Image 1 (cartoon, rainbow, N blue to C red):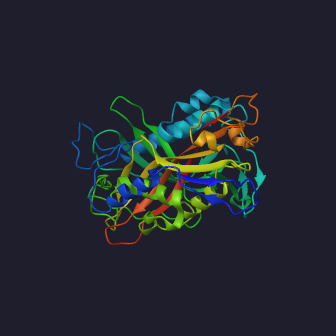
Image 2 (image 1 turned 45 degrees about the vertical axis):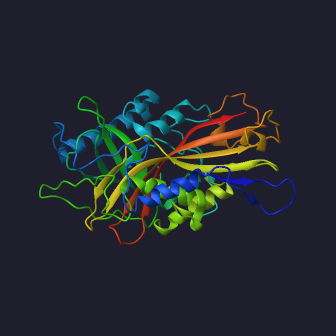
Image 3 (image 1 turned 90 degrees about the vertical axis):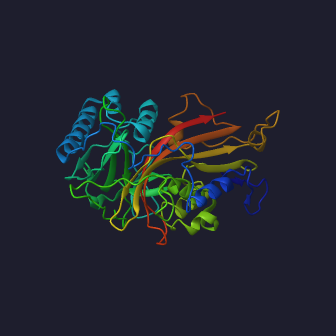
Length: 395
């Protein structure tokens, strides 16, 4: 967790760490560049696990799952049916869609625009969490069977109906400006033999990012990589914690030795530090802090052709603005100036919610894809991001 204290008088911004959690996370994650076990909050999948009766998924079956999702979502949009939209999602994707469906300031299918500072026109708030997209023919990455939960990845190109690439539309996710058209990695998951296949996450590739070539066996299936594998730069389960350390502490973090700088690592740190990633600004005397942390959602890893892994995982990004007495758990808590509520967070709060004077907290559920290279190779590259707001609270 990182903290910014907003000065009560004109002075440079002061930084101070409140808890040692990030240092411990860095140490644990860096240890994974040798040998370690999976951390709590990360469900490891293993290519060496027993088959448990699972059979190989065919391309035709994956295409049917993908088509069912696209058709169901399109019908949900036509009929304005949030419940139908939620029926085909799980995991990180469901958390974000559910939050948007419960919001009162917008709708999961609505699209609002604001002019961004860059080359794109940005869509604030929830974006369209489920937009009226058209999809190109997807490429399917089908893993070798390794028990439940099962998954596969659809690598597809999508476009928002009614717009063209020339419109240059983008969504702000944790501060990262991500085009709404282009290449996405969609992870579909089946939790048990009796469960339906559901969309677990959608992660968009920023401009210039590419998916590495994946390894395949003689039948065209992609080998899975155990999340505790030691044959890579870092054990795959540690990809998220290492990224989090850089997002929390920036390019001076020890984890930056293993994680490449970029729009989804060091730039997320810069966005968090400035408040642009959450839209939060601390009044004078208040404290602003953020922390990226792991989730209980399953992580998966596919073998790349060069012996590395494409790691697919989810993380939380927590943001807080609060008076010092709240952060320090003092008694009594002394209220401070009114805290401005960003529009997207306002839609998750009660209609009559006044501007808080004690604390404003929010959480984003984010999905990522990252390349964990072979041992001795270059740094981890985070190549895709998805997700959005999960909840907001205010006092």
